Amino acid sequence: MHPDSPKPEPSTSDQTDTDLFFALKAGRVEALGALYDRYSSLVYGLALRVLSNFEEAEDVTQEIFLSLWHKDIYNPTRGSLSSFLVTMTRSRSIDRLRSRNTKLKFLQRWKRISTTEGLAANPLEQVSMDERSQIIREALARLPDSERQVLEIAYFEGLSQSEIAKRLDTPLGTVKTRTRQGLLKLRQNLRDFIQ
Amino acid sequence: MIRPSLPENWEELIAGYALDDLSPEEAETVERLLNENPDLRGEVNQLQDVLDLLPYGLPQQEPPAHLRAAILDAAQMGDRPARPRPASPQNRARRRIWLEMGGAVAAFLAIALGLDNYRLRQDLENADAVIQALRQPETEVYALEGTGETTAASGRLVVNPNQDQILVTVQNLPEPPAGQAYRLWGLTPGSTDPIYYGQFGTTAQGETLAQLSIPRDAIPTEDIQLLITLESATAPPVPEGPLVMQSSL
Image (cartoon, rainbow over all chains, first blue to last red):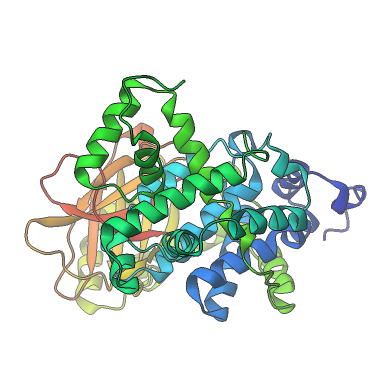
């Protein structure tokens, strides 16, 4: 920290994501630290789930937080920071994992990053990370196992439906139906928490 | 909001769209549905938001304790957060070195750009335009890194904001198949329409030094995400092929 840094702000743990983000953009490294404390387990856990490799998950986590610091890639008016971090982490992790699909469809993912309206006004954004996790886990637990399984493979591993069908030795049509039904049911299970 | 014109399985189709698992025929149907019923886009967004909640269901995983300090140190050692700004004194110093090296500038440039190939260095010595560009204090150099199957690729983009030419150097990017070329795109924050900068090939050694002419109002800046895809060399400038490189974070 420079000796001429402005006087300390109030405790960073009380500040909103947006406050912290603007403090970060003003060059305050402690704001980056506070955002890291808030979201590193989400980012790291997701990267680890996709990559199944501790070292690479660390690399992705570092890339994501440093990109917040170095690059102008997040716009708070377009959605919540947490959903931005999730989208970005998944995209980066799957890019690293990628070797089976030739079509990256990266633009769709970038499009998603740049157009997401996010869940900023949703009840889920108002509760702690622990509560969020609990709500999602309960909603997932209410899905049939077969639907949850394909949904998770599709999301976390970026596999195509036919790749999933091959891996699970299940007809393609069944995989598609299960994934789509799983997603629709998950939304239904979460209806009180999303708009 | 549900209209009688919607097919019975419209929800499943929308879910498939959010999941990106539609067959070409289904995709066509959904595109039509979305055009006819723009409010369905809200459904798509909501389902995508639901998908992006899946990570919260993962078991709690704390990153190793050393990572926090590593990230904060890296942030402090690098420069300040991204924002429109004039060239930093450090960059100016670096460029001054180039200027003072006179005739040796090309060789130095080759090293600075990460090239390690004699022939390319020879090419560079002839690339007067490049050297001229680099003599301008405004010149910026952006790093490019390989993704996916082309992780080994690396490169640089040399941009002078006052010129409508940019220079791309690439290493370890396989020669494109016949009829195909690499295309460079820029994506500004918040935009969904990539800017097309131009296309280039690489040698059998996986290298290139390409000069691309670009519109003055589309000169890459620090905020732009640079993307390189493999495309048909004659296709319209719409990215459809796989991503092979992007600007480093």
